[in-house]
Image 1 (tube, helix red, strand yellow):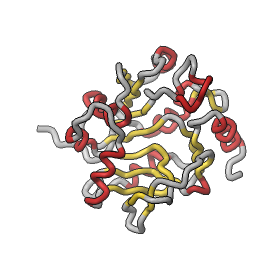
Image 2 (cartoon, helix red, strand yellow):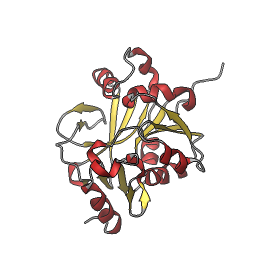
Image 3 (spheres, helix red, strand yellow):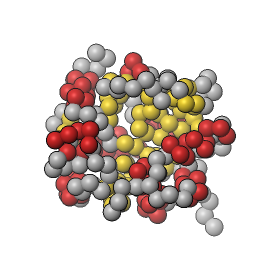
Length: 232
C-alpha cells in the first residue's frame, strides 16, 4: 500500500462563487475572469502556482462557467464543475478524487499579492506531524482593500485562535481527512478549522508582503495601484 504523502503536491483553486459583491461586473462572467492590470484574476493566482511544480491543480466552477472553461482550456489544470454551490468545504470534498491523497493547498481567486510567493512560504513552514491546517494571514496594515477587523490571533508558537487580529489571506495547506466527518453537502472550511483549533492543530504564518482583496469593484483600482507602486 502506498504511503500517504506528508507534503502537499496538489492545489484547489476556488472559482465557483457568484461574485455578487462585484455587482454588474459579474453579470456576464464569473469573478475570476474580472481583469486586474489587464489580466484575469485567475491568471494572477496561477502565476503563483506555476513555480511550485505541483502535480495536480484543480479549479472548481459553477456560476457562468463557459468563459472560465474556455480560458483554462490551454492550461494544465483539471475542472471540478459543481451543479450546485457547495461552498469551500463541500467543493474541496467533491474535488478530492482529482486532488489525490495527502494534504493540499487551497487558494481563493479574488486576491492579488505583492511580495514573496505565499505558496512557497506555506510549504516551507508546513509541519505535518503538528498541523492539520496552516493558514496564510496578513496584518491589517498590509491588507489593502479589507474592511473588516481581522479573523485570527497568531500566537508565538504559530497556533491560531479566533479574534480581531490578522486577516486570512485565502491560501492555506490543509489535511482534508476531516471533511468526511461533516454530513452536510455544502459547508465552509470554517467548520473544519473550528474542530482543529481546540485540539491545537490550527496554525498560521504572517505574510511579509502586501495583499489586496479584490472582492468588490473598488478593489480593482487598489490592486492595480499596489502592483504599480508597491509599499505605498
